[in-house]
Image 1 (tube, helix red, strand yellow):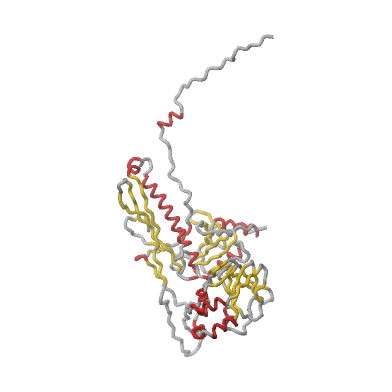
Image 2 (cartoon, helix red, strand yellow):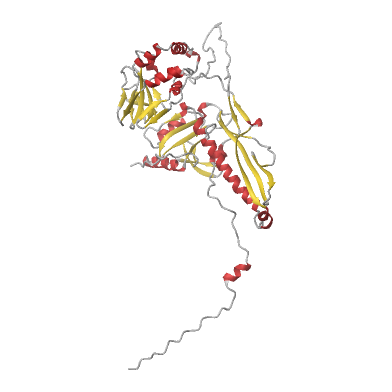
Length: 470
């Protein structure tokens, strides 16, 4: 058998007969997008706030006189497993508001006894004698009582910084009107009436202060703590009418405009030679302004001086009854104010709200905002804002607010007509061209937010967003 060992004949490669695409692209004009940016969000807060012109850079909120009764939260110092109350923080108690003798406050703080509790533990029982003040350093506590028909009714949910039993230090015979049960493990500090009275006996200044407090004309306040306007109704004949006037706060709060600024630098060579088809300066400026607006919204939420989370009234801060954001919690948030315009929550919190709706077989309404359908509860839109922080424990907050000057709500503050104004309340000012031929522009925006009355904003705090319903 003969084997053919001759090599196979390979076909000749096809000859190129036209211009290739790789070479042709050298002569073609590409179609380009404008520079894209992941940081841009919907910025619903900036869109929903009514912006008020603030001439002079300051907005003063004049209110009807309100009696301050020390209803703030108490701060603590943690040293390992030991917790101590900061002495000056005891001034948040109504009876100690304005008392500034640090030595006496320190003596009271030293007599506070730490108590660690477990979930489900009953801390006080309704009907028992009330003889201690309880300061909550950490944890959640449910307050319940007995309703008119003998069933258990929920009164409140307390958390870090809250307290109960203030009256126990002054009233020696009053019983607890509620039962306090721990919803989670935590720590509280207790101050007994006996310890308080022992300090009171050695502190004449404290005795005088308590005497003045107990003699305050509490009957001249309405349920909001405002100075009462005397009036008469339902009378007949020549009844003598009471005189009245509306008193104002003597030291109203003033909001100064804050600022967000940056210096935009562009090389003149870039601006001169590479401006087609897109203007380099314009695109650089557009992205810079987007970043400034994002920072502006972040400050409106989180700033210590005027941010909504930090300036919400303590009486308007609520705790969820079971952890996740249920429809019942949203109802509780809504009922604290009239004319709520919208909820504001982190997108992950909105997802948690949706899970709770699904678990109960509920489907939220949708409303139209500027041509966009957004979810709503009781007709109030639920809007996303990723500037609301999420803690490492996977908890967050939900804001609910009323807006507008006419509604005594929340307003945004800005000033227009600025020199070199580029957008309302935002200016782009040429600075110089340096020795490296780099052009500098100062980009500035001025803003703030004001809460006209305390119930304009409510916050549902410590909302668990990592819990899935079963």
